[in-house]
Length: 288
Image (cartoon, rainbow, N blue to C red):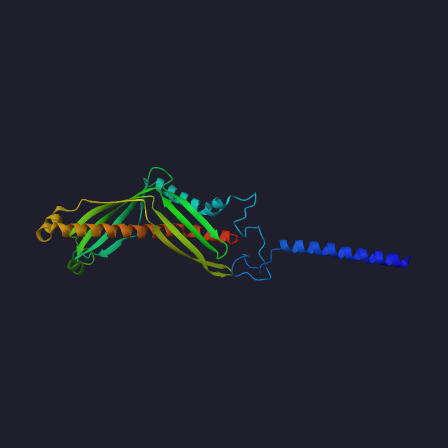
């Protein structure tokens, strides 16, 4: 009799240990341990903390209470673009590239070409730019984003300076020629590739590379050149050389605008791009 009761007691005791061990395991998964890595499934993960599906670790799996994948990735970028749109409403639909200028020495003529006062005329529709692609790669913790412009018109003031004139009056030189150029682009885009370069406690830095995507339509138009230079050109340049110079000026204007527009949009969207990458990697963003 005593032997049966003793065996029953040992059996009940082992069952209690099993229940306690299960509860302890579940409870430990809910504890916020500050020493754990911020994300558990990247290339810096260790064997002690294996990848667990869900909880924002991998965006390929969407919980029912989460936003759709594309919207979750691009939400912060869309908000940043909305802020740019609202700022331009008060500026008569014109985006000023303040602080940016172009300078290039011409090969076809002894002039230095400067482009200033560049402005982007935005369409009346609010959808002049949109996030066309936003994809996070959990394997290497990189973010690929792409902007698509529907229709853009960029204008700028072009000044041509003689090299000797720049040396004689470097502060306020008189241009040999002054023109205006207009560049029209349809369905152009900008691509961004972002990856983390430093992840330490309290510090998170990223590197973003950007490139301009060729548009479906390009049109460059120059107007308002001063008559005195046109007359001056006729004196020592034939028509073929004039055409070569005009093409070179248009090419410089086009390449320069593409570079400046890419740099401008990257600077405006860099905080949103960084925040998007951090959120996708499992970090919590707080603003104090």
